[in-house]
Length: 248
Image 1 (cartoon, rainbow, N blue to C red):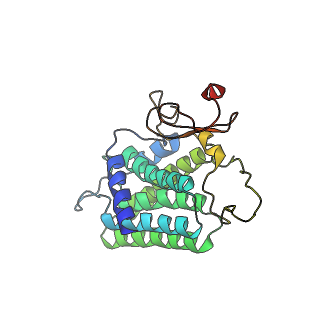
Image 2 (image 1 turned 90 degrees about the horizontal axis):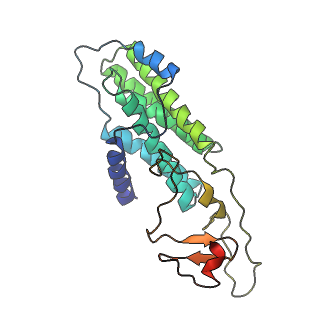
Image 3 (image 1 turned 60 degrees about the horizontal axis):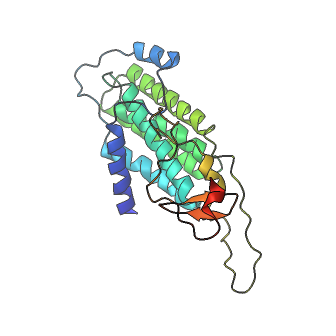
């Protein structure tokens, strides 16, 4: 688990260095909040701390583990969380916001969306965001800036949630599995290994046409499924059975 967390943090740090927002846009509501910010004197510039990022990732990993997300759902959940934090920081760069409060409330909206039936996790996420807010108060951040940081984070998080509701992940094809019999492997309940509908899920920042519009890049050694012939095609179009022409 610790190794996975380090990998996620490294990937998150790479994402936080990108020069654009992946999903969120500077809406009139966001611009209105930014215009209300006043400069903060006597405090160092706020930066997202390791403790905040680690705790937010830990909570999401707890939700993923407890609810037994499939690998694809896990990847999507972590991507949406990382994008919400990145976009919130990117759209408010150079402003007098408290970065940890901003990130916590952006992440809160995403995690509440990802785990609607997990009340204990939802309570923990809200309590964590409130604790980060109180810590910023103790450090002397002005209340108006904290409230605006909170509102900005929520606005960005809600934009990411709205995007996620339309990315196609909810329209999954339920696979058909063989009936149990001696020598037949039966899929464990609640642990889907493959979800056929995921090929239609819209990617984040997936191609040259702009964020979320590009197709999967060919030639990466990833398998693809041919629905007509029931084939699994490999790197060079090789097939394990049937005719590759059926997939054209």
